[in-house]
Length: 228
Image 1 (cartoon, rainbow, N blue to C red):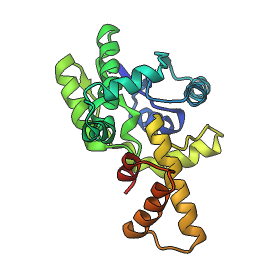
Image 2: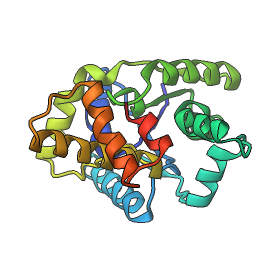
Image 3: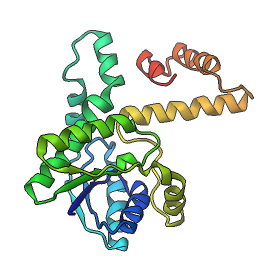
Image 4: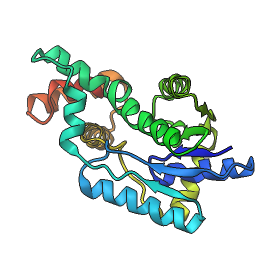
């Protein structure tokens, strides 16, 4: 088996590499993540992965592609001027654009460079849309005639995170794109307010806090709907 493993970051790679090696599978890591913004964040994750791959003596292929304008325009290209279309494009950005763009590139590279099997560390994260990623990988595998190695790496989530922290790896605080950064920051602010006021984390209470922020001009309608 010649496995090309799409890799979103070093921390998500730890358990995946470890568990694959236990099976006798030596992966080649493949970095292609134009979803990560801003550039400082992109560079931090990329460079951390480079250092980690070197320390683990695992081969790493870098498809360096940073481009905020291209990524955002790609998400919004099918949205008209209708606010509902724009909102839907943002809500469905992962499954309709982000996952397909990144994972198709992996299969294209694998096909052109003699890899017979593909997988992704996205299957490790408990925050990603696991079933959608699995279905997409299966579809791409049939299209390109390449095997998809499916593993539910989520079973090693805590183990991998603990090892990543112990190794001093850079631990990101949001998925990658500017929209997820916004959601993460808003979520932390809501949590801070609820904790300071000893408010229980029910949907109703979260809505009240976000609506107050909305009235104050701190967030917009799209952000509110994505976070409740």
